[in-house]
Amino acid sequence: MTNWKDIEEGAIIKHDMEKSPRTGDWRYMKPQVDKKTCIGCGLCFDHCPEACIDYDDERKADIDFDVCKGCGVCATVCPQKAIKMQKN
Amino acid sequence: MSSNKKKLALTGGAAVAEALKQINPDVMPVYPITPQTPIIETFAKMVADGEADTEMIQVESEHSAMSAAVGASAAGARAMTASSSQGILLMAEVLPIASGMRLPILMLVSARAISAPINIHGDHQDVMFVRDSGWIQIFSENSQEVYDNTLIALKLAEIVRLPAMIIMDGFQTSHSVENLEILEDSVAKKFVGEYNPKNYLLNFENPKTFGPVSLPNSYFEFKRQQIEAMDGVIAKLVEVNGNYGEISGRQYDLFEAYKLDDAEKVIVVAGSTAGTAKMAVDELREQGEKVGLLKIKLFRPFPYKQIADALKNAKQIAVLDRTVSFGSVAPLYSEIANSTGRKDLQSYVYGLGGREIFKEGIKKAFQDNWENKEVKYIGLK
Image (tube, rainbow over all chains, first blue to last red; front, side):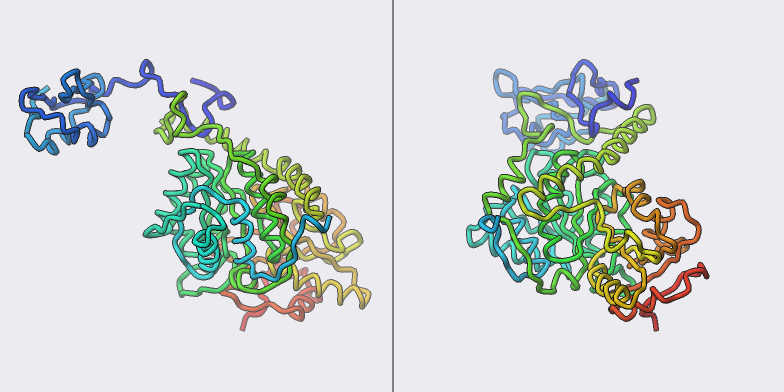
């Protein structure tokens, strides 16, 4: 590990996707998006604590499963019930 | 020289508001508590009158005030707040976060006693309580010093990237009207300059993560680096004091040595009591007593070497603490003991809960026998 003189000041670190842990490994339940039911309202996008939901080309919810921890907040807030939590 | 100064009669609180008006911070989350409220009220009126365009946020508690200041500062804004006593204690869990994240937040403190029992008057318990939080702490004797220290501390904090507390005595200084000179607006603004944060959240070209978790394999190194930063403050303060001396005509040092050169009996004290003590020293000197005073200004980081050097010729030293550390020796006494390495210091505790300390009480203290070593109290019934 880095010595104290070279370590990042104030623990302010450069975000590096290569070095970030793949927290998708932590998942127990996996959110499945029903793209036909999704209306692209953006509630899941706003609420995801990992900020790992994006829009695909049709403005439907698109989840990054490398990072998604399976917390289920997206499924809870979806007004259309388009997201269902399933065993990983 | 006189063209860039303005002479006013202001309370400590109002004096600080003048400094804030000149600094014009970006964000000031505030929550009132006696005796700091006049600071934020005076400044809020200035903002309402368009004399400053600070975003003042009225938050729901002091914890929120410091949290909002951390958020604003991390985003890249100049953030400040003010508090006292239980308010500082309520913010206490956020203070080391500001320091650990190296955010140059300024907090104006009107130092006040801690409960229980409830007491709204001045002493140093609140700032002493948080002396380990990693904040720079600078004491002020009067309205002039509070005004000057606010500008100096802001510049210092932004150079070293550590938060700073500017301390005035609650009521004694915050509410007492004194004469002071303030700088011309343009001179003050030029001195503090623009804030150019090294790291900030709103940097989209170079995004960074703030406030991550650090496991046992890295935390120690982060703290060691923070220690280094705090240790580097002393040299930087000397520089900034020099710069300020040039534009103001008031050259400050890390502490004030008053008639110390040939003094045999010296007292060490911080805050407004130093003003009263100087009068006591003067009167005793007229009677031929070789007495002197060391007034503490920079308390964190503590300038051990410089103070040891200033006190080297003193035959006897007494330290006056306006606070108490239950179950232990008083904080300033402890620092002076560490600084001088002497085991023969006399500890005094005085002024708790705003208990007045008069010139006569200090003169009597000088005449006490300082060889007993038991803690003595000034003004206790």
